[in-house]
Image (cartoon, rainbow, N blue to C red):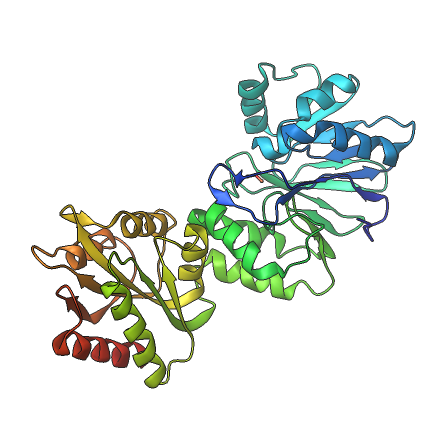
Length: 384
Ligand code: FEO
């Protein structure tokens, strides 16, 4: 990848072998571990890469540097998808200084068994490291996505090296739209930490930014307002779409029919933005990201072992642990004897800042006139 930022080079790698990112997330188009080199009087390497790509990464660095030797490796984030090769790099280049903050070096010691006491440069929030023309300003961004995270602003090229922020799933040799995979990445990885993301955005808002170089996904340049706007919405838990997501789990198809009937009734009531997700079959992280995308959520769940059906239970847990809020939620329950799904779903959202729909649909085994009327009433309430 060619960067338009002067003296700045891409030395990252694409991973198409990965099965699950962070052991959880499916990444059908792989993922990129980005790393950059700034060549000035002094040379800085921005972050390392995942443990499986050390050879390719070092080769990329050597091809940029020719015979020159790097002076610094800046460690913005210690999660191993970025830091795993920092140890090898430090061993290959014994003159290199490691730049991080106090928390970085605690983690580095935990991972590598050494904190490089004689080779470390410990920086504070707002500190500046000059490479010559390029002054690197360190801006702490705790919990975006770990406590040690910092981002770096190169005042010469007006570039923000944004760590995990503004990243997305998908290797760089796969051409795909940014929003969906960036949203799925954001909601999954840092969705819980909206407050901290908002604080970091406020710090960045004071800077003129020409481009963003994240640790995953493409470099963003030009008009950045689209990306900044989405990040601001995500950080503040604002929905992107005024519409309804219907999430259901169905064993014999009756709950699915209730969900589909609601979708039809919503369309009849004039609500054009409606999507359905089967919680047992659709990718969990897509379901969770879409729940954050839409302004209203209906969950159709069944009673199972006097509890919620597992995929419904896990879905709700995924939402509440990410501080899901500022939306309307509604419930459809299906049960034949001792149904408790609606109450259990309500209980699980009890501490969330949500508006509950008045209508609760109660299906007894299969749809009948009464439950159809409740679905119609719910559609009218949600379409308002
Ligand atoms: Fe891409 Fe939080 O590491």
